[in-house]
Image (cartoon, rainbow, N blue to C red):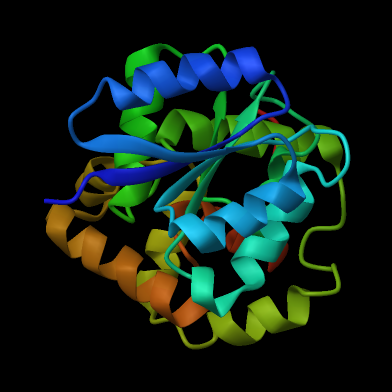
Amino acid sequence: MNPIKVLLVDDQALLRSAFRVLVDSEPDMRVVGEAADGAEAVELARSTHADVVLMDIRMPGTDGLAATRMISADPALADVRIVMLTTFEVDEYVVRSLRAGASGFLGKGAEPDELLNAIRIAAAGEALLSPAATKGLIATFLAQGGSWGEGPDAAVYSERLAALTVREREVLVLVAGGLSNDEIADRLTVSPLTVKTHVNRAMAKLGARDRAQLVVTAYESGLVRPRAE
């Protein structure tokens, strides 16, 4: 099996060096490039055929948010997964980065095992947004405010939602609530495999890259509205 190709993007050389040592110490992954800004990251994503990009959000010049949009919009880079790195997990750009196409986010203070696990999950095309992270994302939505189901893309999202079955909508609501597949299975009295099938079908119908995009879609469409605890 080929190792996971990882691209490191951060304007701090010391941090990139630390990440390189960590990633290259694993037999199933290797660093294929480093970039200090978003523009360079986009070029390297193309030339290295990276599987996963660890992308810092805040960088001088082209920031991680803009770079994520460019990578996500390029059909040739459709298989590239982006993990956003933030100083604080409740970051003002977290929601915007997920809208731009990132697969999830990770705090820079995460433990080494968490970072390595995030790379493996993203490379496998699975949902990087854990139930705990989903709840954090909802908190960020709440903190930012906004018009739920009334944004410029709301009509598009609503039209896509019409293609979902009743069960797929039900699963989508529970995913947006931060429940894991196992928890959803318990709630609906079905198997986790059945839940995974519904999640995958919902992603295909909604054009979502992963679970993170499902959560964004659920809120942007107005299907789910954030509420305080």
